[in-house]
Image (cartoon, rainbow, N blue to C red; front, side, top):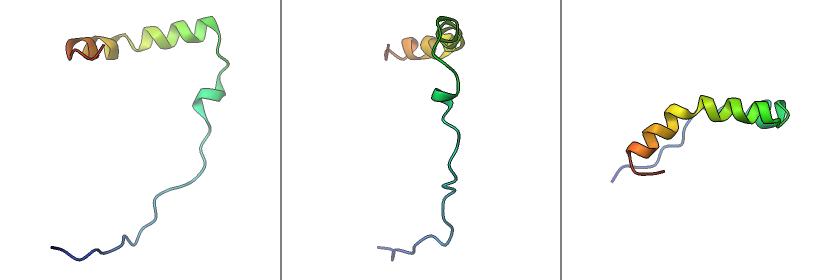
Length: 50
């Protein structure tokens, strides 16, 4: 069993802009998001996850 050694570097916890809130939820934005994710849906369907 190895001894636990804490990390000497801290993770970056800098606040970032919320991308969900950055753009209003419009019909056009939702349609664009849906179209952009077509390849992801195809991969999931192929894996039997959709």
